[in-house]
Image 1 (cartoon, rainbow, N blue to C red):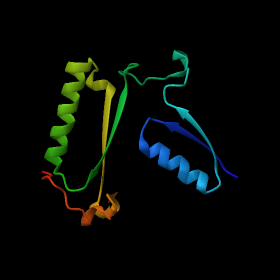
Image 2: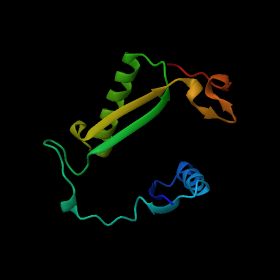
Image 3: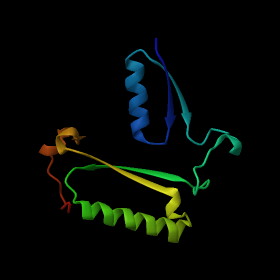
Length: 121
């Protein structure tokens, strides 16, 4: 039996993942992301980064222009600096774009889904 540790970020994905792994006869241990007591000495920050270092990962349908992605990055950088006082040096953003057929939403493949709103990419 495989032993697996899952960090729960309080979302439905974790719940579904844990049940899926248990159905595969895995021994799953779950810790909520705020249950860790880690000493400040355990962290390493690259030059120019602080304890506010933040990683942002965005999953999206593919198709956005380079200009649209750059505009989004700048907006996030500006908002984090202005509203959260987190320097742009402490923010990293990655957009993972995948084809719509790689998404399963509301019982359908993403490329078969009809949305009730316009998505401007």
